[in-house]
Image 1: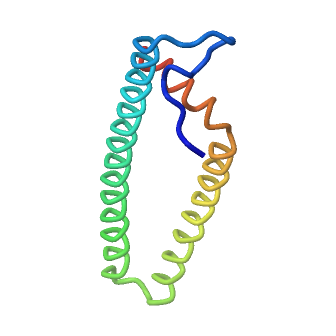
Image 2 (image 1 turned 180 degrees about the horizontal axis):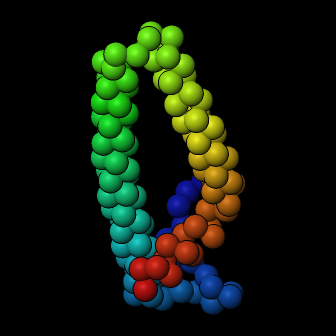
Length: 116
């Protein structure tokens, strides 16, 4: 299907002037670019926090293993912590799934409102 020229685009049955169409397209591109940049910054920050938490958890596990307690007590302590973290992770999965289900339009509107 061939692309239609900008002159043939219509709004409410009336042709859209080229300068208005160009301005709208420019604003859309700017908005998408700012959203992408914001998403990249957020993702980078999340990765940094996750890395720090992982390092802390590893240090805690090493401290437990280096204590003078019996091996069975060490394993029990680690197992309890793993179960608690697993339950917490499941809660995050439920929340993330609910956020994904929310329509993309609502997310973009909310993001645009925060920018302005």
